[in-house]
Image (cartoon, rainbow, N blue to C red; front, top):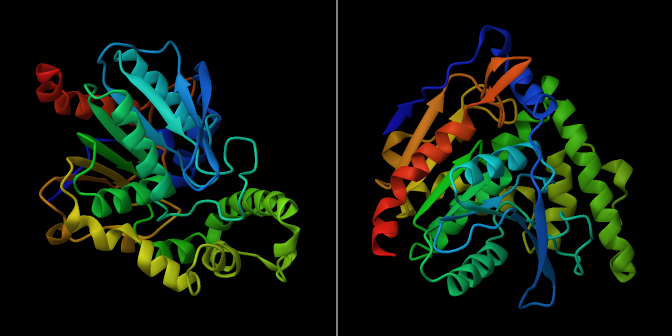
Length: 326
């Protein structure tokens, strides 16, 4: 079942671009954190960012996965980690490879269906904290990845999951962001993606690509010329087809909240599933507005971020059985 969201935008932020852009511009929340480097089984690494102060004992642990080219400084990560800590829970961000400020060691990095690193990290955290309830939350690309993870590992370590503004149909999302005003977001992301690609190439001169950065003008071209061949896909469309979370929603057994805005400028209605495709474990909330990871309420001088209230409220409903048994 698809539930209408209770989010209502204020009069001054009904436009999806205002929601998307001002969510970043107006957010002032800052958190302290400490980094932890994890060596991966294949010889590469990922960096975790633990929100401070560290919540010990058996307090719930929430693992966050950022969006495309995001990191601990992303406004939505800072805000949500602060909101989780206000509940007395521990928040930790897993940076995807190459997103923590240092290029990863291998040419391969991360993509929307790469679940191996999150699987390793979540299993490691379960070994460290066998009594803690653990949830995961993914934004945008990180949300689509989390759907892939939940479907691939139905018997996972999580008691709950949250997916926000995820491009569940990757091909349609790539086309949407390459049209109209959304090209501005594409230009911003592509600039960072190409910079990080060049950083990795400097470590692997033997793999110098025949494709020049200036020749890539869209995310689809990047995925076709770089993401796909680097990660074992035939082309961009093969990558999109095999990694789109939309086709995996019926395989999820972990209690999962999916939040999406129909006016998200990064994607179109193709990412919205049919109710019949949703597994019983999924709570899907669809709002008419909210932009991409926006969902701003309040006033411009005192904005409120609805996700930072809705997500903790939903998670609090998932903890009791686990806390009672701890």
